Length: 190
Image (cartoon, rainbow, N blue to C red; front, side, top):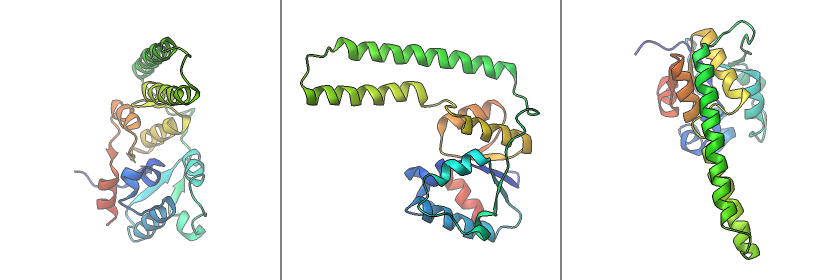
């Protein structure tokens, strides 16, 4: 494996319980632990687009110390200079269309169940609909501008992305961008 110098950090590394546990019990603990370890690794440069830093900040109970937080460079991608292949856009459009159709079929299935259910059953049906619909439309796809910022910045810097978002991994790999799991990231900073 070639030596990793630039890492783009996704919010999921510190927020997703499956990945956060490598760094701490809470989002605040995880980020503090990561920053303490990163301070000792002068050869590694970590970046976050400002949109990701803002997203992560929404999960923190307190802002990290300024002297620690500067270890993560907040850099936006050059959105007007960085390009993506047209084939990727075509594939993305096709996948979104298929997911919308799948979501429509899920909504139709729940509509057929009818509204004759009791209030409790109705609430449970709505909850189940939301879970299935969200899974059909959002899992395994780039579903935010923040995700796209990560891909663009990684492409621009020739960096890898540290994430636990499977959709982000799938689409990053289409562009030849390497991705790290939380476990791999922990191994690098230890």
